[in-house]
Amino acid sequence: MMLKGKKGIISGALDESSIAWKVAERCHEEGAIFTLTNAPMAMRMGKINELGEKCNSKIIGADLTSVEDIENLYEDSLNELNGKVDFILHSVGMSPNVRKKKEYGDLNYEWLNKTLDVSAISFHKMLQVAEKKEVLNDWSSSVALSYVAAQRTFPFYSDMAEAKSLLESIARSYGYRLGKLNKSRVNTISQSPTITTAGSGISGFQSFFNYAEKMSPLGNATADECADYCIFLFSDLSKKITMQNLFHDGGFSSTGISEDIIDDFS
Ligand code: NAI
Image (cartoon, rainbow, N blue to C red; front, side, top):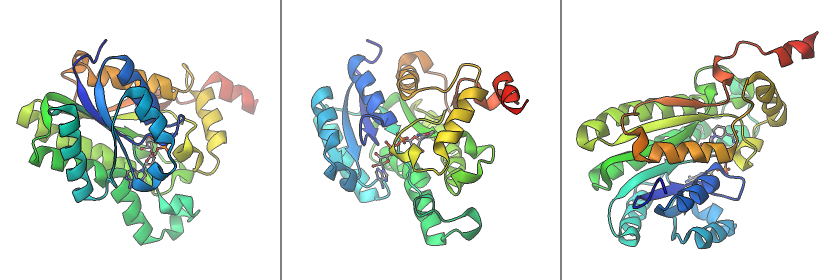
């Protein structure tokens, strides 16, 4: 029971393929108590209720681009959990440009703002409101999900690359601030391509999923494995890890080329 006695807030569980869904299941297994949150529109799909029942968790609707919604989310969560929180998962991303297949050279700038707000600035908002409302226990751990397109170009990832760079930068800046404040830590996990609703929305996803699988000496990291890593990061075993972007990708980010890929070209 690595998270016994810990309290948290988990965002972004849409259906059983969601990374956040797996994280919630694992947190429950490890003895944590937590609230679940998603955008009101996603909640209408109803799937998240199953997860709520399974994990004994209250579900609180919040559009994470809205400071007011986040304030309500925290107020409700602290009541429900009977105290401050030890961990927060940010597992939220969306790009209207990607959804509507706008090319990188033809971005709609209103949509770009939306991409950045939903996928990155929402993390700043969660942390800023948490600081102001004194929501976080000492040594709390906040984690957001990122992708290697923050460092290297993946053309099909479009403006989500900008969002991930910003997200990682926010984790660094806020990690410093909250570390000084009460030893709280903030990190991003740079996860392998994973077959989920958000993932599959990217064009050519299946091809780059297969490519990453062949490039990575350990193969792609699955959503379940990502959940295991989150448990470690939420636990007291990772107390001095902060302000990091942590690659959880089977070795993909450090590999130049693999024998499997060479074989494909010979
Ligand atoms: P998913 O589609 O299951 O989760 C995305 C979630 O974001 C959904 O639950 C959706 O309702 C929520 N969301 C969208 N707009 C929101 C808003 N305004 N307020 C609150 N929630 C909102 O997909 P997945 O893959 O589990 O995505 C989770 C995170 O993992 C995202 O940040 C994604 O970019 C990241 N990631 C995913 C990878 C993949 O290949 N699937 C690879 C690396 C990172």
